[in-house]
Length: 539
Image (cartoon, rainbow, N blue to C red; front, side, top):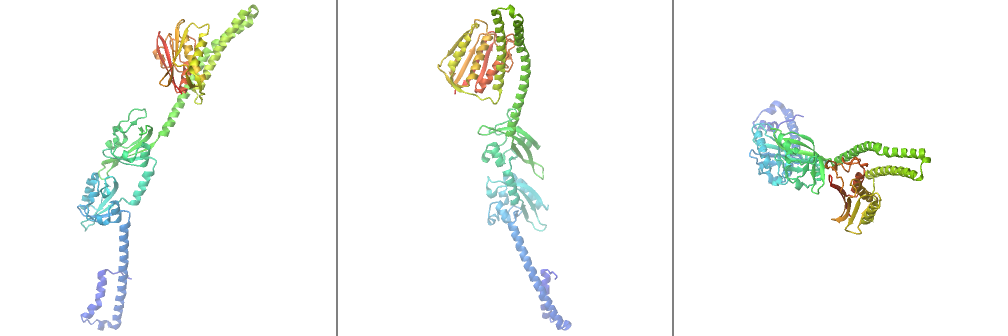
């Protein structure tokens, strides 16, 4: 069936009436049969037109419904920005009723920083361009706390001096983007041109330890940020990736920084920055920074560095041990072998006193070697991360007194040892074996490196709920350049090499003290003596 326009249909409807009214001789020319045929054709054509009209009405209603229900926002504007018409999506995005919008000026919903771009977009569209596009920020319902970033497309029809504007916020896409940003594990922050933060996702809040309200409006140069480099030096705000990107337009990747949270702990992050550019002018209007928490990675790296350091220390320890053992073990072993051979070869010529003398020398050398082995074993035990303290309640004053008495009872001692303690008894929870080893070592060193007939002072006191043990001698002193290395295994002062020793005692003492969460320090002056101070928490 042919399709007719409304004008053609009207002409066909008027045809029989006009012929009859004009007194035409059509009936005589065409006959009755022709007249009936014309009437039938007209009725058929009229029915077709009614069906076509009904179809057009249904299509019009359908497109009207689509116009109202599509997720894209459509507005019709005059050149001055007055709103002439809006669909539901347009009213929703501007947080107004459809009736409220008509007559309002659209520029009143555009955020101040975006008004120039919106005005330029409208001017370009009304100047004859078919389509003009801009990215702007809206403040729905004139609320300053609810910004929406949208893309607008302005277009004019060739014959209508009105602006038809499409706001392609597109609810579904916007919701998808919003869900993606809010659920991503990485932190995301948007900065304005001046560096002020205008958006932060939940992961950014979690990583930085701040709420969105605390983050909004801050710039990277805000003094409230406490940021450091990997080496611990301050990370100046003007060198922050966001500020650098806003300044030169260059993207930055994998910048490492440490951010102190309000609670005092630190988050290590790897941060990237990208510029935001206007598509028409390529001008930078903001920046986006994304970052992820690498604190766990940093902790693993720290553990690896510590493991590597311990491995290096172990290799060095082994080398030093081999060097020391070749000397410290070889000398007493040689003496033992020489003495034993002498006793075996000349026993028949020796009296009992001579035999006892040689056997005593063998025992002394053996004890020296045994002491060395014990020191090495104790050092390796206290250096082990698996060593477990065995604290018991002891009277530290009584333990110190017993050790001092044992030294003083040695008939070969040529020194005077003076012990003082202001608190008697002095109870504390300590690993008695380790602590007695520390006290014995410090007194032994004071005696070993002091001239005969000098005094060694041992003082025990309580200060600020800490136990403080001081051992002072009047000996040769320790060179200043040696004091920093004094507690390293096998290290010996440069002026003490002529005195027999292994260089292990102070290293063992330091490990034992630190296992108790204490400290050990040295004060010394060449030729005037040394004071070793041990401080232990009193539990």
